[in-house]
Image (tube, rainbow, N blue to C red; front, side):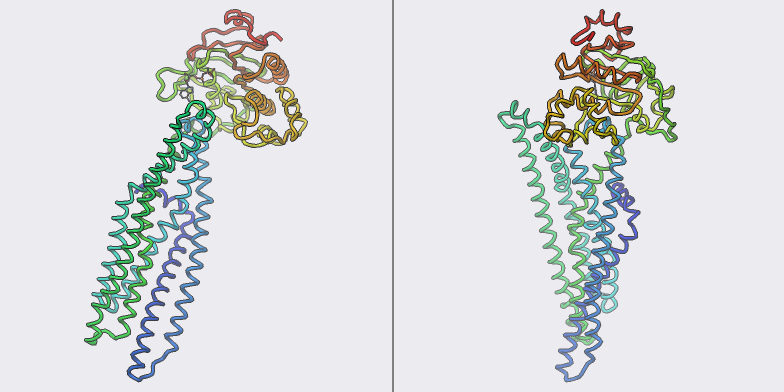
Length: 573
Ligand SMILES: Nc1ncnc2c1ncn2[C@@H]1O[C@H](COP(=O)(O)OP(=O)(O)OP(=O)(O)O)[C@@H](O)[C@H]1O
């Protein structure tokens, strides 16, 4: 219920359009019922008058019939326009609403989400919410209005007939849908859950197809995928069966109430208490009334799936962001030192801290190298500096203030970062580079590429900067992707540069050249260089050695490089 109310609350800005659409839908249905009733009355009255040999006024009823027919068509047409307009406006507001809430969660709070499942939420669940008005809310609301008006009209002629029709309408419009909801709820939930699961597994399957070819010759992953697909199809089949049963139920109720009206009304006509033409009028009116009852089972059957989607969306957007935005963010100074002050970070659920009591300061123009074995917490320092995560102990400061005091985007504008697993977009080299400097000229792009040691590669491509790098950079090698990422980081005009393993995947000579160019390009900027390898660590002002999240040694390169075992590949160039 809370999810339903939250969904309704999201629709508030479009409420006026939606109310008008519901009223127009009700008018269209009432016009249809009136048309049927007037036609029934008119044909019978004409027949009775003909049999009795008396003349009746044909013009007024014919005008009513034409009027109802026109009202039905026009109101149905306008209702479709208004209803879809309301839905489109809701769509236009729902997607940004979702994205605005999702973005602060990335990357830290979305790490446990499978990419396919996120895709399912973005697509399937949001789609379902978008159509909640047209498929669920509008038919339910219109039915309430039409039933209230229609039953009042019938009871003005005969209370017993009104009671029987009301009973049939309530049984098929409320009882049957509730039964359907009960029957359909598990299947609807299964369709939502298995649909998302299939999406996630499918994306995993496609992304990991090379690994599956190597490690999964028995095609277990594919078999699991097919099993999920079969479960989904079975659940969809159950839903379709229930929908068929519900549709047949409403049809049966409509015919039964037609019969009941005739059975109750006929003796009254014979007894003279009900005029003859009124009986077919009421019978056809009652039959037409079920037009608004017919969509109810489907609407109510759709409701659990819609609510399940709403819940999946709300649980995602309700996650607390890993670092809350300050209510009154401070302006971020153009320059400043990045300082770790006894900073610690324990990942949720982790037994030991990934970063423990780390203190160092990266002043403007200073170069700090961080070395340490895999898993020693080096990349976690980057997450803390970027404010992707908040320190669990101590503080991370920029220009003397906690990074949490600044608006995240403005803070990140001061940092250029080449992270591990730096993402290349499925776009051209130029588009990937200009992300960091939208107005950069081709010369500037090429200069950065030259420093990153990737210009010769780009110039060898027939399309040069307009070469498409493929999904996740699939069309370039790991080392080329790394250098493109480095060129992008160098292009960003930021006072602090953080490079996490910038020469990973490069041969010794290229590494030496790239590092020389990087050091030249970062002259005067603060540089945090994280590396397993020791290339050009001798050019740092300070080296920090990490193990198990803690700083185990620090000092000038000459001293530290001696203790950690030589200058490594490419050092000293
Ligand atoms: N998102 C995360 N959730 C939970 N634990 C994490 C997460 N990221 C890293 N860790 C853990 O924190 C520790 C430090 O990881 P981190 O990536 O900072 O190390 P690293 O020194 O950069 O390693 P490498 O040199 O292999 O990149 C590791 O034990 C790792 O398993």
